[in-house]
Structures are given as C-alpha cells and as structure tokens.
Image (cartoon, rainbow, N blue to C red; front, side, top):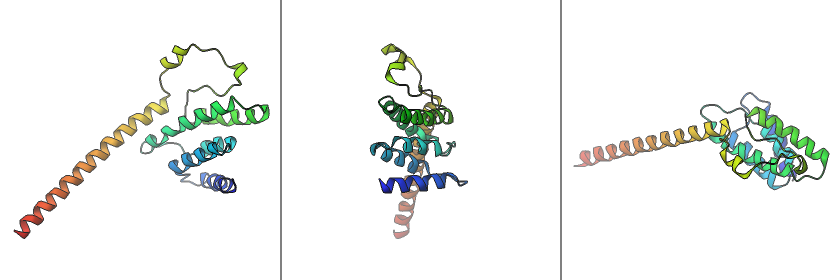
Length: 164
C-alpha cells in the first residue's frame, strides 16, 4: 500500500504539469488501486487524467470500465460518508469524460429498471469515439506494417540482384 500511496502522490504531481500523466499509466494505477480496495484514490486518479486527444482517444476506452467498477463498489459501501466522497469523485469523472452512466446510488435509492432497457441504451459518446478511433488506429497500424513488409521485400530483392 505504501508503494500505491507514493504512486498516487507522483500521479497527482504529474497531473499538475502541462503534459499531464500518460493515459496507460493512469489506467494501470487505477486498476491497482481498485484491486487494493483504495477506491477513492482510484477515482481521484481518474479525475486527474488528462483529456483525450484525437491520437489518444482509443486508449481511453478503459475509463468507462474503471468508472463502472467504482460505481458498482460505491453501491456496496456501508459507510455513508465514504460513499458520498466516492460518489462526488465519480460525478466529476462522469462529467469530465462525458460518461452517460448514472452516478452511484445506494441500492435502496436506485430506480427500478427493466432488464431490456439497459441493453437498448447506446454506448456513451466517449466509448463510441474511442472504439472508432481504436479501429482507425488498427487499420493505420496494419497499413504501416504492410508498407514496411513491402519495403523490406523490395530491399531483399535489390540485395539479391546486387549479389547476382
């Protein structure tokens, strides 16, 4: 836990810089914090994450998963004060990253929802954008690999002709 506390401090310091924290590192930190049951620190790390850019949006798909995990946890917390702090952080995450997921409510306050209603809701805008950009990044990576293979093949042919 001491290592995670130090990582949280470093993350908070780095978040204050112009470049902010690297997305992958922030998501990994939140995962480790959730596993260590340090839920408020995990939510705070999500709040501190820098905003996605067009180039990094695909990496941000993990935010929704971490957010949903924390929402689920907040619904089970018995301590009202702890739940309140976590819910406040989650509301900030929800607004900051345009997540459409409802913020955590205690089980007795949750509206009753029909099972089929949840399946009909479209994914949040950030998630859709991240998925589209992730597909685009994969296509670009495949194109780059194909070009690299073509160049390598051309170089091999040129070397073979030079040796002949």
